[in-house]
Length: 261
Ligand SMILES: Nc1ncnc2c1ncn2[C@@H]1O[C@H](COP(=O)(O)OP(=O)(O)OP(=O)(O)O)[C@@H](O)[C@H]1O
Image (cartoon, rainbow, N blue to C red):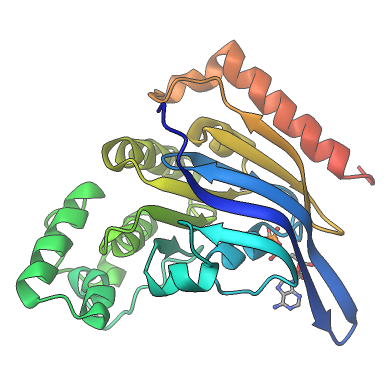
């Protein structure tokens, strides 16, 4: 993509949690811009602030320093403007609602007309390859399908930004590979801007246009890697020298941030 329209900007972002055991410096001096259509992954060891950063973008946490803008607004304004969909690690579907009923929930809350709700639910079911499953209950679907349903729910109101916090972390390798491929296809079709938290180096390298490597205590960015890989990526690109080279750099970055390894 040639245009560099800035969607998310963090300037010297800082967040210190006050806890009973004293202050926890979860984010320190985080500077990052994410452009429209970027696929940005956040990778780093447990506790380096990946989730906290995503939650700041979603106005679920309030930074204690620095500036953050989302679609040219404050994070809070962007939340009210429903600028993003958020996908959590667990699918979090209501068991008493059908898949269609779960996907429809945000649309009901936002007051979309009944016809529009039906149209959008059908559209997003198609986007995540779940046509025909709208009438099923979550327990009737596999873990991977449930996670796709939760992605559909986040896409239902057509926000430009999709924030995903380790959405495939609990799934086995084969299912994860398949969902990674589908997510790339979905990203190519919709042109969304995606922020994606993961612990997996191959997943980060396979999916991203940029990889943000983070390190803990305090949580900070230690490397930002621009991927030279083409946007269209068959799974076997993971065996290419370019892929292995980027994976190596990510691994080195993670190791450098881990003083005790
Ligand atoms: N609400 C909170 N109150 C106090 N401390 C918090 C809170 N949320 C997060 N933290 C702390 O902030 C730091 C960063 O946490 P965060 O969950 O963002 O890390 P992470 O990189 O996403 O980790 P993981 O990979 O395990 O999910 C950790 O030390 C965590 O214990």
